[in-house]
Length: 69
Image (cartoon, rainbow, N blue to C red; front, side):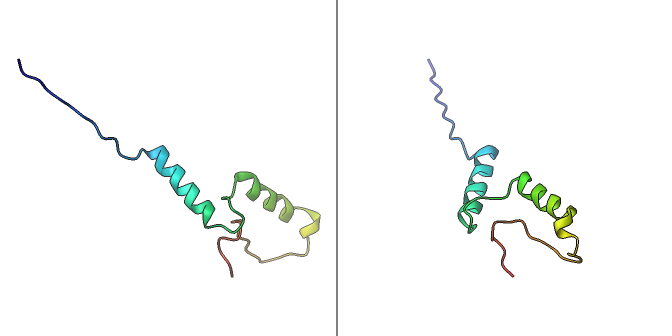
């Protein structure tokens, strides 16, 4: 009788890789997390509103302080 042994060593999965990227990015962001869609929506809503009526020609980074100018 022949015996066949097989083993599989699993590498990192795409889901785990994404999780690691998000975690690393959050750790490198001063606010400790990455932006969510609602964060961007809040900025868009503000800029579209009356409170921002005198703001023109600006660019805003919604990134929790990850990029400083």
